[in-house]
Length: 99
Image 1 (cartoon, rainbow, N blue to C red):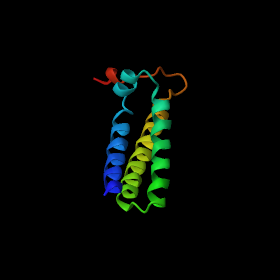
Image 2: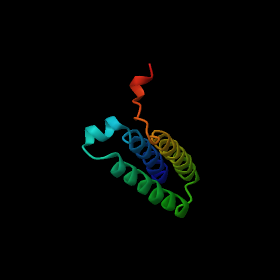
Image 3: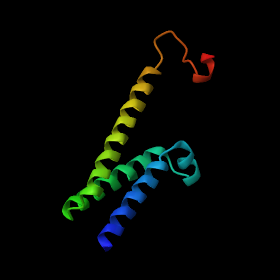
Image 4: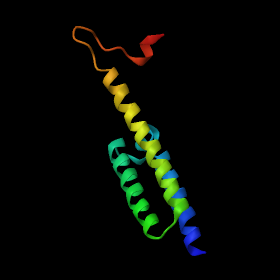
C-alpha cells in the first residue's frame, strides 16, 4: 500500500517539475531554465531507475511518457532556435514584427 502512495506522489512531483520548466516558473524560482531542465531530466532518470528496480510499472510508464514529451520539446526548441539564426546580410526578425 505504501508503495502505491509513493508511486502516485512521485508522478505528481514529476508533473510539478514539468510545470516549473516554463519561463514563468524559472522567473518565480529565480533559476535559469537550463538548471530546471537539468533537474527535471535528472529526476526522470533517477525515478526511472528506481521504478524499474522496484517493479513499479505505472511509474515507469509515466517516466517514459514525460521523458518522450521532454525530448520532443527540446528538439522543437532547438529547431526553432536554429531557424531564428540570421542569414548573412539580414537583420533578425522579432516574433512581434510578423504582424
